Length: 397
Image (cartoon, rainbow, N blue to C red; front, side):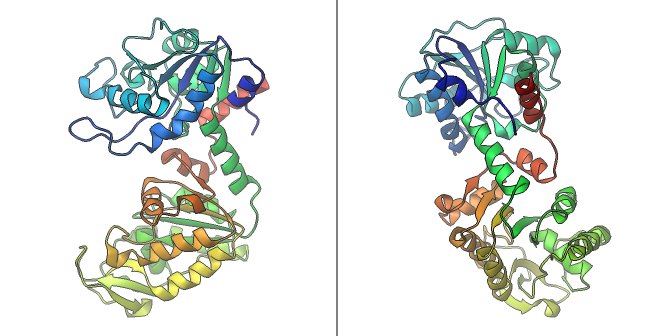
């Protein structure tokens, strides 16, 4: 994917003394006291900021946080807790600037955090006037927020249209490279794991992947709909019976290409959805009318693990069972460990997937961990993300 990369501009000395506007993704969870509970996104944004500072640029960073009302700033929408954490990571104070749209005073070698970008009127609708004002603040616009790459907003798309130079930051560039490696020119076999509660939210992804992958592992509530499509009992498990025809179409599309959607041979069931519910391993044909399927069984997990170990490329989105409950976490853990042990290039994304990776401590054994939820899913669907589209246009001149 042909985009201008910020690292290249820095290497050529083109950022020195320039006003650099970085759109980061600092949308982190806060507790009731306004303290950050998980700071992965803040840490992930540091390399780009440090790169700009070392290059002698005057650095402005902004992000959205939560869902503020445009035009109405409330204290709980403030990026102050983020500035504090960013300051610790950068080893310098990071001032927070409010009401910044009409001008920012920042000198080369300094960094400021511009208050919550979603408070600006016209941000979400990618308002032209706002976009031009943002572009006027800088010499170089750096998009480094993959988590927002699927949205065309003033601070992600509009500014990239009008800024003198628009480029991809290191985090966004790494995402582009990882996604290209996994989907555009993958090493085969390419295996995808798509799991979650509903087929309906991931149907377009399943259909798009059915045309590309050599194996499509489904899990969670999605797998139950596929079990129904295969004429197997699921008791009172979560499923979408009205989408059985769609699931059958995915199975047929894969079969026509000599590929497969592996259907579980055994499952772990319970009578209630609870952490302390007794877990029973059953052959899939023996699921009773009052059973809930909460995980894949050990035989299925072992078969799938063998497939993953032999893969060339693995795309992972979603745990295959209720991994938050220890009794129903073994399927997800087995697959996670198989991905870690595989020589395949693996890319993983989505909040629950990241939680599973953290739970089993396999961060270093996954080829690339994507920071975007919605953006990652849209890429799997085969969509061109607005952020990539505008950066490619600007690179093409």
